[in-house]
Length: 243
Image 1 (cartoon, rainbow, N blue to C red):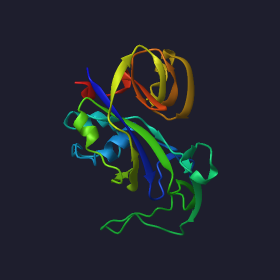
Image 2: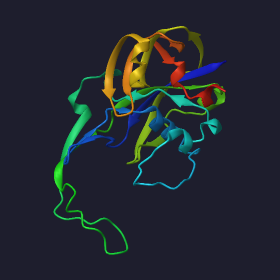
Image 3: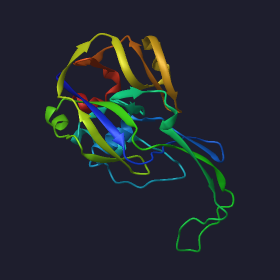
Image 4: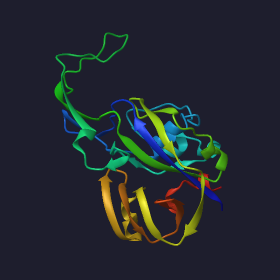
């Protein structure tokens, strides 16, 4: 099994919002982009399968929504950081801005007269990621040409608000070796799988997974980029990528 890897550095050109929590009128944003969001954005959603969306059941299945076999590539999650003088500062208050909103009255758009929104919050606060923050993600694929198709300066749209992201730096495409264990980059891990770590650092917790880095005791992909190293659990790469 031959797997290749490439390092991507991306900058958000506008304010970015992915709601992490809603306490009625206080909206907080995730400080990272998931692997799924990066796949959708960096493939321009060309493999998205059209289907009916049932808002009542609110069911979402990424694998059935995107035909990964037709574009077999995957990305590690990217956490937002502030960059100054080519150095990333992970703890910088300028990454986030908080906006206050106050809506006196508003209707849902429609052709049948609309439905009043008085039961919804009309005032509160909303966090957003300020422009010119960065994420680093690593793309992996068995098809070297897919990784080579990306170019510095290209623009992609991410998230439901369709924020523009620009590739500001790219590595060469590198070959990955397989190791029995190792220290991994932040990865979306099921809660029960924490037993496979001998040490770990939890970066975020969602309803579906933990965003975690640390020493993983199962097989990983490993790739060196000079002074930077990428290691990622094989079990968390969709099987369609490995075929």
